[in-house]
Length: 562
Image (cartoon, rainbow, N blue to C red; front, side, top):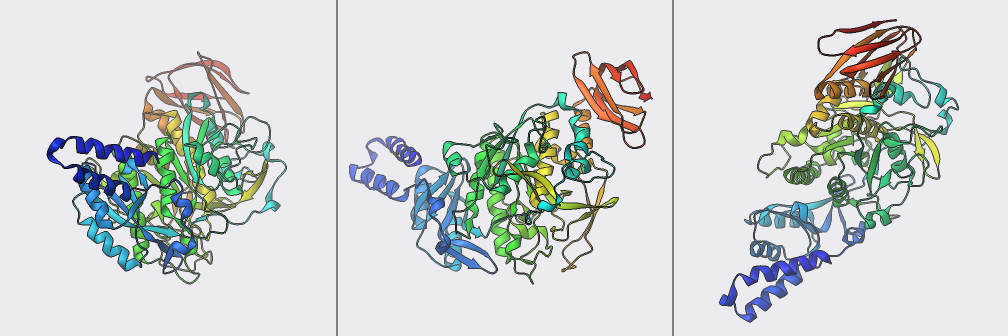
């Protein structure tokens, strides 16, 4: 009810400026109107159930009695009140940071709601009025596969031939990135997903929620816990797994609907997004999407569904950016349609729906490219011998930016356990972890710079799957994310660091220790070669072949022979 009282106080503030020009009766009428138009309910999202959903095409729909009104920032109180009157409904929810009122109207069909939106969009106070989309939103993974769990996880590391429970860490050269551990700063990461097991040994103390309400809504499940483990699982407890960005806090929101409910309004995810960003999250992971709701023999939703997704999520991003927040969004590309056949990733909803022609950005100083440069869409990769291939169900197309390991990924589950899962749900948090390392090693970067570094500093290519049901959906090869190369680029971009080359024995540990006692620990590859990036200064170099000192500065070409 806090918003109600704030709104009422705004009425009195506005009326006070009119002095004696308004009669008591006029004041009373206006006050009564304001109160009747704003009856905010704390749990209005939870009150929406499947009976409130109108279906459009295959498993895409809208809330039949709701319109979303985004007001212009400079719109005055009375003009906003007038627009609410025209809506014919009451405001049951709001998002002040986006100037959003969620208005409950008389239930109607899509055509009726669209006509109402057209009417409201003509009002001078309204930036955008839209329907409230809803989908059968799903976590994007395939069933657990416990038969691929290996007992020798901790002993097996071979980046040249990834294999076993930690193959996904080997494939992205996570160890190479961790060698720069002394340079990483703590970072806050957002995860909007299924519930999280906060008591898991790997995640203890690493998960927080934006507020007490979100903490009480958390319903632990294996998907959200698995995603969280990939990003931040404790790496120094002698068991289980190591997350990619271990010195981090996850700011989490559980978006999942109540038990037995199939549909979820997009607003639930949108609210989660804004809450984690406002709470300080720099990279936000969404291992979720809607493409699996497309029928087995179809490859697309009606265009109206994606267009409204693009409008809502682009407006939300733009509003937060205009207020000074900087963040990077990472979303899974999706695991195909209802039959598991890959479709164009633009059909996966949320941020996947973005393209230059359908984003809505009425904020001064921001361009559509500013939004596109802050979203990474991730496909799933598997290792096949000495090459990487895309999973047959991994969605494709121009909106996909990069691939990451997403097959047989071993991570945390509920009840302090571990499970293997596959899907783009697993690939997205791999990229989220790498992007977070990049930002942690160079906090002065902008989110668009982080995306550029992550997507352009790679070495391996992920070839398209040969298993295809639809041929005209934009199959292409994508780069495979590489943690070490991305982190090194961020260090070089920060300045005052230089590349060091080392030749020694194969699989040899090399330790560089600077005058402050900071250690940088790396392994040579199968040929005995090592390349790393170190800040200028004096180092002690220790390995099986060398124990000496080294001075690194801008005038030196660095190469150490074993």
